[in-house]
Amino acid sequence: MSFICEPGQTRPDVVPGALHHLKATPQTVHWGYFDPATPPSLRIKSGDLVQAEAITHHAGDAPELMMDEGVTRIFKEIPEDDRNPGVHIMTGPIYVEDAKPGDVLEVRYLRMVPRNNYGSNLAANWGHLYKDFDEKERVTIYELDPNTNTASALYAYDFEGKYLIPGTITHCPACDRQPALKGVRVPARPHLGTAGVAPAVDGRVSTIPPGEHGGNIDNWRIGAGATMYYTVQVEGGLFSIGDPHVSQGDGEISGTAIESSLNVLMQIVLRKDIQTPGPLLETPKWWIVHGFNEDLDLAMRDASTKMLSLLSDQVGLSRNDAYSLMSVAADFGVTQVVDGTQGCHVRVPRDIFPKMRD
Image (cartoon, rainbow, N blue to C red; front, top):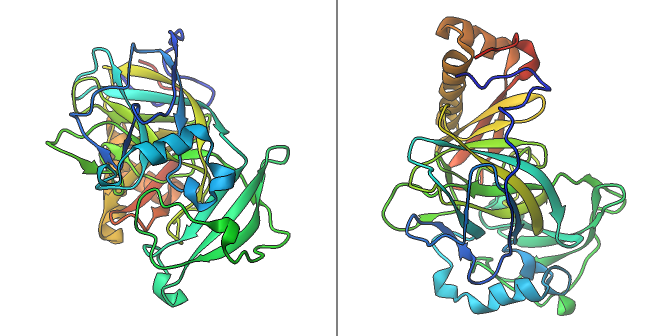
């Protein structure tokens, strides 16, 4: 069964099931890792709706603005030695009944609302141009305007030392605050930087690099109105979300986006009738596949071969026709270059295909 559709068409209608609320607490989050041994924080059925809290691990960059009682509990109660090997606070995992390896979780992201109206961008030691700035790290705090759906810089400050400990809390009320980006307004586009299923491995997998399980893809298009497809690797899928952003450009060149906690409404549908070439993104206008590798050229090749597979296996094009189409109609981009494993994406417009029938 193909799942390429014309714009305006949807996947097979699924009557929304139960609505679950998944708050982020020290008991319902895991910090810095995916692990198939992590007990589920929630069990759902296919089609159920989940209202979940996604917490930024950068809330401590402006604790008086970005840390409320719930966030403070997570930062205080989860030991520092249990925040590894990655850095992101992940809400979940969510166990989907009857999900088996090889199935696909279709995650329909319906709404993403900032938990508060502030976010942080760190020009970090893992940023692409870190050495060009004399190995200095700098934090810029942004305020969100929900009326205009924009963000503007409140102030910036230089970070002393290296920003290495997940959940760092600064003392910014006493720091040297400097003006930044006067008059500039950045479009807000809330999205999840990191989300995915548990990989089929023994032990923890870092949340920092993206991979076939999803993870830290950092594609700003994974927001409200988008649908992601993740291939299940272990029983139940064990799906988690984290690393919430309110804005980011392709490349994420300084090392971070505008990091800000989000409340996320999503519908999770179990699909046993389709396959997907890695983490696949559907937006109202585009199909987008992702490629990963430590080498950016090889990441682009990975994205290319996945799009070739999508067009041949799902649309039914010959490989020759698919290759030609990719050159004249598909757009390639660099998703991020700061997560160890680098990411490329390629998108193809949905409205160029004739209506597909089962």
